[in-house]
Length: 172
Length: 323
Image 1: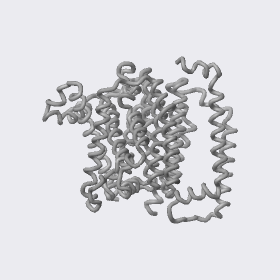
Image 2: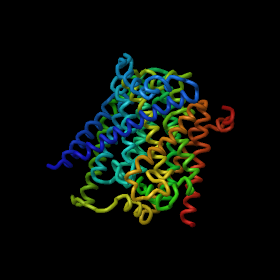
Image 3: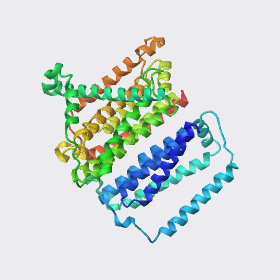
Image 4: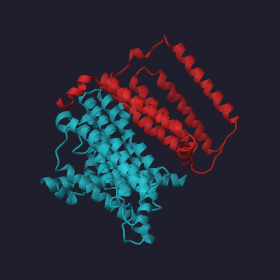
């Protein structure tokens, strides 16, 4: 076995452990930190597949923004230290297991069926190819996604702010 | 395999030495600007001071309070340190003296610099202390707010250089004959420096630490070697962000009129000189300006810097396409 394969399988094993820890721990912050490790290991896997761009997007968007906002949200509201009893929710375990199993099967089906079990190797810079494809063939979906994000942003602001707050803005 | 070890060693050495040089500069700046004679005279004209500081912190007891969340508390400084050291990997000291000339160098730097926020936040939370939590929250709010203008300011440079590789950006500036700061990115440079100062959490943006109100912010409960890691990381971050700013805006390892054939010899000296000049400006600002108020800080980021950087992108793009 080459060193590349050893690293890949080791990363996958660690990924499995940290992902399991995200859902089994009964402390919100520990779950969030495990999620950071899960995402970082996923980024490592993408790097091993030489897709730099996807790996860096994972780090920048998910670790740098989503998890930070998640931690920020937890801390600005309650910031509980120690175990959190609400997280041990036995009622919904079956639903959770069903949904995650279904997603796993769906993804496996698409990946195996879509590529016929073949390993596709492309040469050259994947980032450049990605940029070209996004701005030529997929330019409409790309623009629509940005529009949806804008709508979500405006919706978020509207929900979070009351009208009085807008009036009293200058009186902080 | 040897190459990897050499690179990692170079990285740690360069980042740590940069941090120590900037520490010396900071205390000497303080003593020069504020009449604090200590760092100018004690021990070899004050140059031995950082060594004494490091020894002091290393021999101190590493106190971990009983109520803290131990694993999180212990590992928080590591995230900050890792994000700082990894950031230096893409900074080119000369066309060949660079740890990794990534195709997406700029993007890598911005992605990695956002990792430090997690360390600061978890340090604040796990300390089980109100001051720490407040400091952590302030730090997170500040780092989130100033990361946007930092990224957007760099976009202008990327549009102008047509590449994201840091070596490529410097080569483009050599080709142009003038650094980007003269060639149309002056607004971008100012925005970048203001946002970078906020990212370093230095005065006038040091509310997360704010000695007079929060004791020491998210670092309150830390002592000994873990405090030292936070302390050194701050200067390391300062050194590396100044180096990145010199690379992106000031022409990196090259100055106009010097022959490009010799760039491998004078490259590191030129880059470090530029970095030190930027660092000196930050030191001068630190010892002469008062601290912002929290709402002023947020207003500056969201209402001035972000719109200004968006306009900068627009103007750069128009100039690029039109001329």
